[in-house]
Amino acid sequence: MTEYKAKLSHLRIAPRKVRLVAGLIRGENAVMAQHLLKASTKRSADPMLKLLNSAIANAKEQNKELDESNLYIKQILVNEGPKLKRYMPVARGMVHEIQKKTSHISLVLVDKEDKDKDDSGAQNNKSKTSSESNKEKEKTKAKTKAK
Image: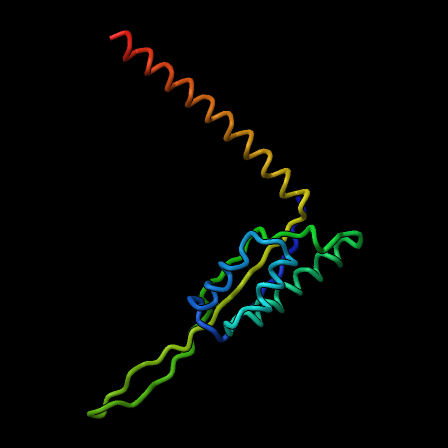
């Protein structure tokens, strides 16, 4: 399975705020995610759109025949970066620390055919487990009737 990655480090927006936008596009088609980010009013949507465009460009560079509409967001992680520590004077000669938080974002794209292969494998496993559980349910019903 071919993965196409892009990273953004030291974004001067708190990770908690960036995760809101990341949740919007997680699992979406790359083209649909671009439209969602363009329509979003959140401050972190612009850097996220730039990162998504970079990941798409990376994918096209690695595979020249790749169609942009077949790309899906497999994973998007927002981690905490280093904090800039600043101080604010307050009453009685004291000072309070202010933490200006930063974010690290990593984005992974996969091709639609690869995603379909993953999903079909997962569905086969689910169908086996559900059929096994149905058999177990039938056995327990038979036991209760026998009693």
